[in-house]
Image 1 (tube, each protein chain N blue to C red):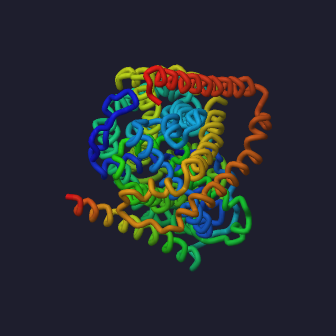
Image 2 (image 1 turned 45 degrees about the vertical axis):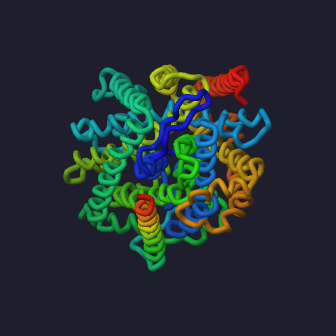
Image 3 (image 1 turned 90 degrees about the vertical axis):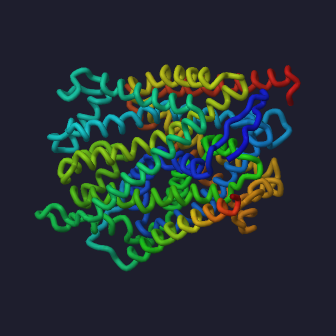
Length: 525
Length: 52
C-alpha cells in the first residue's frame, strides 16, 4: 500500500500490505470484549431503544470526529516525521518542546492496559478450551461457577484446579507469548496477517451464535415468558424518560469512547504506517461502522437475549448489575450447559472473545514497539523482548494481588483515555490549527466530508470530551482516589498499584527526554 | 476494549414483548448500520478499482 518511509533514525519504516488489511487491523483494534459484554447492558440500563439516540449523537459528534483526528495525527506523524508513537507525533504538531511530553499518555495508557488486558484475554482462551473439553460442565449454579472462576484465578480452592493458579498462569504465558510473537513479526507479517485470519473468524463465530440465540424461542417450558423475544424487547423497547437524565447521555458517550478504542495511541500508531496522500476519511469511517456492526447488531443479539431466555428477566438484571465478567464468565457457561451443542457454542463464544481481545492487545503493544524502535534504535526482536520482559514482570502483581487490575483499569482504561482524547483534540484543532487539521483529514479522501465536521472537531468534540472527563473526575475519580468503599485489607494493594503507575509515568517521561537529547546530539530537531 | 465504568443496575420493568417503539428503534439502528456498512465498503472497493 505504501512504500517504506524512514523513521527518525533514518531506518525504513514498515507499511500496510493492503487497505483491507489495514481496515481489518483497525477494526480488530476497536472491536473488543466491550462490544459483546458492555454495550447490551448499557443500552438496556439507559433507556433501551431510546439509548440509541444519545448513542448515535455521541458517535457523530465524538466518536467519528475523534477517530478522524487520531488517524490524521497518526498519518501526519508517520508520513512526514517517521514517528509511530505519540511523543513524536505531538512534537510534529507544534514547536514548543514540552508538547512531546504530553504524549506520555500515549505510551502509559497502552502499556498499563496491555498488562492486565493480556491476562483477561488469557481467561477467554482458557474458557474456550474448558468449553470444548467440558471442564466446567456439571456446575449448575452461578455461585458455583463463581467459585470455579475464583479458583481458576488462584483466589480460592476447588477440586477443578488442585494446582491453584497453575492453569491460569500457563494460559497467561501462552497468550502473552502469542501477542509478542505477532508483534515481533511486524506490521504486515504479524498484525495484518492476524487481522486477516482473526476478524473473519470473529464475525463467523458471532453470526453463528447470534443465529442460534435468535432462533431459541422460549427454551424452558415451565417459564414461557423467559424467551429470546423478551430479551430483545428488554434491550430495545424505548424508555424515553431516561433521556431526560444526564446519566444516559454520559453512558452513551463513554460507550462510544471505549468501543472505538479512542485515546490510546493505537489508532495513531497504525495510521502512521500510511503514505501522506492515502485516504483516511473513508477508511476511518469504514472502521467505525464495522465496529458498530459488531457491537449493535451482533453484540446486542447474544448475551442479554440468551440470558433472559435461560434465567428470566429479573435474574438477568441481577447478572448485568454484577458486571461484565459475571455475565461473560459465570452466566454464559451455565447457559452453554443447557444449550444443545453447548460445547461447540461455548467454544465459539470464548473463541470470539479471544479474537476480539488479541486483535486489541497487539494494537496496544505496537505503540511501545514503535517507540523503542524509532526513538531508541531497538531492533524489532529487541523491542519485542523488552516488551515481553516488562509485561511478564508487571503482570505478576495483577495476577497475585487482587486490587491491581481494577485500579489500573480505572486510571488508565477510563480516566487516562478520556484525558488523552481531550489533550489530542485540543492540540490538533487549536495548536496545530483547524485549517491545517482539516487539510490533513481531507487530503487524499475518497469521500467528501461535510464542512460541518470542521466546526464539530473544533468546538463540539473538545466540549463533549471536557464534559465527559469532568463528569468522570467529579463522580468517580475523587472517591476512587480517596479509596471510598475499599476494604482495609485491599488498601495496600491499591496504593502499590498507584505507585507502579507513577513509576511507569516517570520512566516514560525520562525516556522521552533522553530520546530527544539523543536526537539533538545527532543534530536532528 | 472493555473499559471500566461497570455495568451498574438496570432499570426494572416488566417486559413482555416488543412494542412498536422497540421495533422502530431496532429497525432504524440495524438498518442505518447495515446501510452505512454497505455504503462504506462499496465506496472503498469503487475507489480501489479506480486506482488500479
